[in-house]
Length: 212
Image (tube, rainbow, N blue to C red; front, side):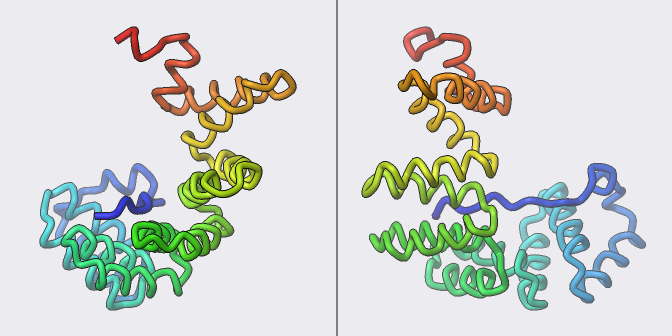
């Protein structure tokens, strides 16, 4: 299966902690999903995940896709990808991408890259990056390294600005090599470390792989 975008849920913590076993709550969320409510879609998906019920999760995902929710179409593409049915996965990712889903654009970029179509991969990642997908910006930067180092730096900065900890660390590591940009690089590495990037943390602490 491809490495795909991270799905996010904007439900507040208190809503995620609601009683998933309350029949009235479940029925209300099911009804709201039928009206195309994205929050209820995520609520039902999270409920299935917390109950460790993959069949129920797939049912909700498929229903969301049938209703035209871009998140449903994207997750259905992921399900097909996990089943190694790339043709169906790409078909659903394309539908989701047409609806503006950036995670699907990100996944389509990897599908193209794995098919050795770097131009198509670049197109999808740039499209997602233009809609503020940090993972796509980082993927585009790594692709550019193969062709144009200066362009790669531009995309790397964009990925860092969008919050990619990998980009912050890698960009910082490059910048600290230059005296004029050393302070900026050090700050980026520290920021990545604060956000949980292990290599950045080790760099800040002055550790190396040999210390293990």
